[in-house]
Amino acid sequence: MECNSHNKVAVGLCKSCASAVCNNCHKAENGKFFCNEACYKSSHDVDQMVEFNTELFLNSKMHLSKNKNYIDTQLKITRSNSGLWILSLILTLVLIINGSIEVKNYGVPILIIFVLSGLLTLNIYKYKSFVKLKKKC
Image 1 (tube, rainbow, N blue to C red):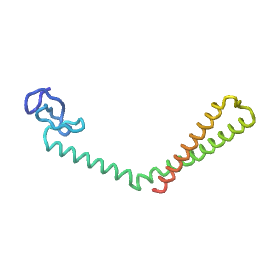
Image 2 (cartoon, one colour; image 1 turned 45 degrees about the vertical axis):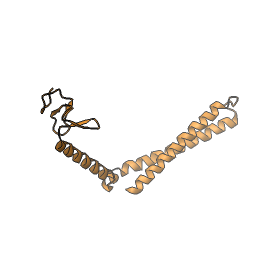
Image 3 (tube, rainbow, N blue to C red; image 1 turned 120 degrees about the vertical axis):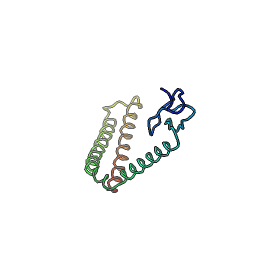
Image 4 (cartoon, helix red, strand yellow; image 1 turned 90 degrees about the vertical axis):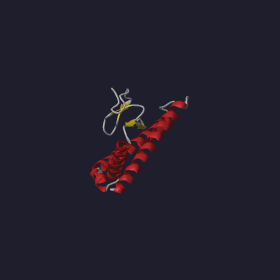
């Protein structure tokens, strides 16, 4: 493929107009090629507009209200998961105290408690983030 302006080997296509560009005439930014300043400015303006509209949509009440049912469902699931992790943690501690889990090697019971505590902490963090998101609605 040859450059549209110089009849040299093209190094890429203009992101804006899709014309072939060579090393002499292209303007590159972040791996994107542009054949001239007008195409660069046009593409840059479109990118800014898309970024602005995406941010506007993600922060809009309409977007959040559409997800309100999803948020409510996730809050219920997260609450029930927290209960299960707490129950698992208590059950593990009871089994250790009762002697059902041997504590000759403290590594295994401590690892079980550590993993369950970590999962509970992550679940609580997830719950708090959903509560914050729900307040935005």
